[in-house]
Length: 397
Image (cartoon, rainbow, N blue to C red; front, side, top):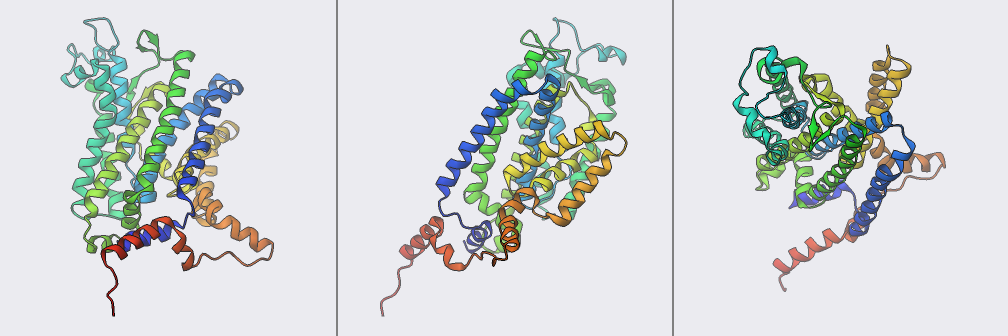
């Protein structure tokens, strides 16, 4: 309990958490309505499609923030779960053919019969479940094998990257099963009789991306706002004290890693259907590192920061690559260095914790200090104090 209370102190005191959640929900819904109703009228079809891709990448950034920002586990292998979700949906789309036919790429390698693991993807409900469950199971199994041996820190990051290399080489070498390095195309396939690559179907997927982004944001906010979220922060800040307090951090870490993997799978499916292809390049090391950069730029342990970082960095990369195609990677590296050295808490973290103090410093006013008495006004602290006093009443003298 002491560790959980310490995590509350690290989060900062919110005078009225319910009111803050209502305001946050109103802001999120307003932004979603702007994305769905107004931006399609202002942006060209090309830019709107790009925005849809970036919003789907924001979903995987939420998963990265959950496991890295809140739990302190830096995963460099989320490309695995992202690609698995994309492959699941792409396999279903590849099978939308007349009866008796199999995807064309099989004929290039002399394959006559559909491999057994393709057959369940004839079913659309199975595909929807597979997009979530397969990445979640892989993440859960990998997390269980790692966390039960108390591997953490830089060793966890190295192991996730090693797993990423293994998956990349496996998918890259399976030409006869999943078309190897060429990947699976989706834009010419049909879904419910409509071609996936048409602007009308792409707009439907854009709206679905916004809806899933809002839902997954709400899920992450729900997970991180209660006791589960405070436990994740306690594990991040001092796992040994959590263990000595009687909790088992392994189960919490496995669960949050599996949830993060499932979120990445949904993101991968939405990105695949809007980019028109899924390939082993989604398991490239650089791509998984970019996911971490998005969260770092936006701000760790701030869900809004993860979304903002993913969208802003990808838009900046697109614009810079159009203007400076040969040196835009230097801009991305400079941006990351700038954030690490000047804004270690990211853009949202700076606005939340440093902007006010820096403004008061410019105005030559003393910084605002949060003192211990302010904790006594927190409703959660007051509730726990009342519960402790009720269970352990003071002894009469």
